Length: 221
Image: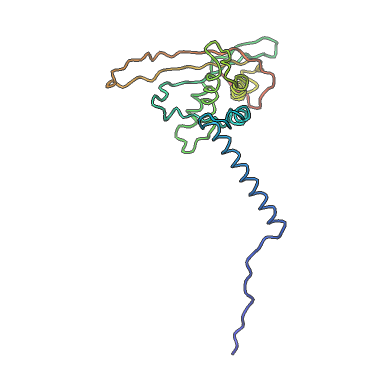
């Protein structure tokens, strides 16, 4: 008795247009990844002819989203707790205005991260890096240090604060916002023999006028 032999199964293959699409997509992703790695490398590498020649383009690409910070591995890492706080001037329906109390935005992020096994990148780094970027490009009188990026760092921090507070607070429309940093030095261990002032120091920034209401829900201070 002759056994029946079915057709040999054929491996699924992509059509020519599909293969072209996949190849183009892979190529674009590869070029984009190489471009990103190249720009970040020029940013973190020691100063050289190429990085000097394209310094403006590199800075425009890296700041503020891809800024690199290696202070965690420095010989003298950060030894301060910095909380970014904000308040708003609100215009009421009757035409009057009121100033809200200070809202600790950093404390809100910390509370959201606590007991969260996968906190978001924004919760961990957005405020911290925005404040670091601003303080790196402005002196204690909130004047530009001339190192470049001062306008960008200011608008970046302003947009984050405005987005966190929302367009409406306490039944009114937010017309101005203000941010400040509350900095507290971390107490040294007793065995170190060091003594530091752990009093919280505040640095207030000028008021910013809210020109475009950010998307958000009404909050209460």
